[in-house]
Image 1 (cartoon, rainbow, N blue to C red):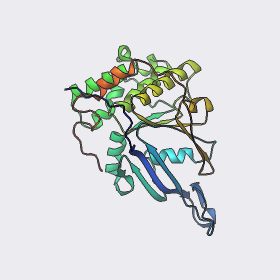
Image 2: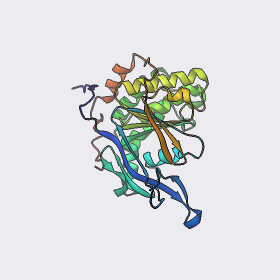
Image 3: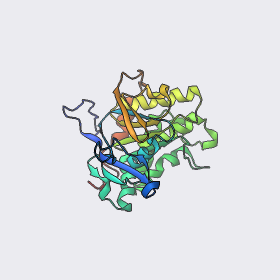
Image 4: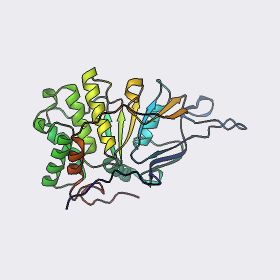
Length: 284
């Protein structure tokens, strides 16, 4: 039986991300530097922390100059770092209560990462690259192969499954990275400057792909310093000195690739669909 993706927006969207009073500080005493601080308490001057909800199916761009706190926020959202104070719920899971093993499980199952530098393994085929998260999750070979091929088809690279990174263009390498991020059907796609190393044509290809994925209901959080990239988002947050100084809704650019609907349905089908990978238990 094939699973069907319901694209209807629920009456009360469930936040995929909920953070309350989040701070990140380095150093001690007078040497303390707050990478994330939020507004200050008017009486004490102490940081109140950053609070934010991101709903299921949203596409949020986080912008800011160097030192604004956007990379710190990304690392915390990706469970790659922990806050100094505050609470973070990812898809209903309070990550502050998880140990290292559970955090690794959350990163594997609930977050799809796309980085500026691609992070592909040299001398390894595109198919094997995309299979890696499933291999770490203990998914059987046949199911792993089926899902990896579906993910490559999703990004338009099924015919390049046997190619290695040095046989692919920069844009194709980033599309392999997107396929790898999506193969476990995560709750959120977290993209950190995904077009930073790409030419203008490849940039448009990758952004069109992310647009299309969001159109199928995938939640996207994109870190960028480029206004043209942020135009693809539905919501734009701007950080300055560890604070969210603006939070605006906008009409994003249009035109997601038409092939994504069928390919995404194929990826979501089967025993390792959106509910999790191979029936593995994810902390709740």
